[in-house]
Image (cartoon, rainbow, N blue to C red; front, top):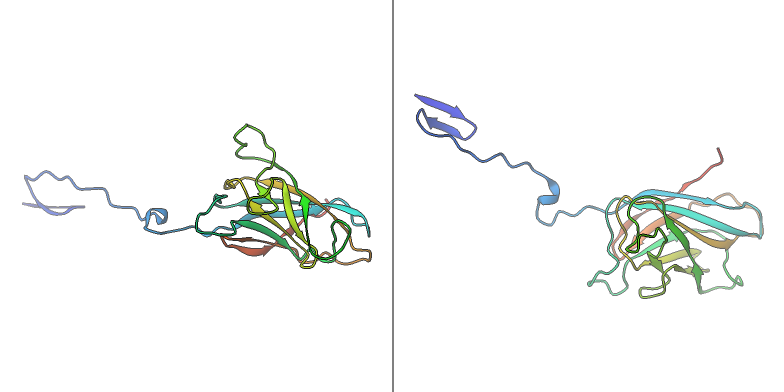
Length: 193
């Protein structure tokens, strides 16, 4: 007599021991890599008035962890917030300057010291934490990653710019990653309830 099993055809007196079928899990496949993306990217402001110091706040979260140090990158990993149209920082001249970035972890992993303060970003690849590079000509803020960014953790970052002197509609502000490419996407704008 012959029996049919998951392992194929076997005789009546044969013991049937067969391995479990392999489940095809993508992250176990050689060189499968998740595409990093922003799963949260909300932005708001403290004031809509012209020529006034405005605190812009963005809350970001990534779907995967992003390392601070990548040996194959000369310029490191950075996050860029762009199209901050007509805003200015400092004395208002052209060129690049350093901005203070205030932040905190809203949920998820605390820092090594147990704190929830933000020391993930700096104004250059090896710069001081809690700063960013403001490009007054391009109207963008670039923050280099100086501490590993955890996945699925809300990071709230705030920085000050001066509003334009004349009225304007809110521009299409975008955020992207450089070094480890993270696709550029528009921020979701906070609205009053």
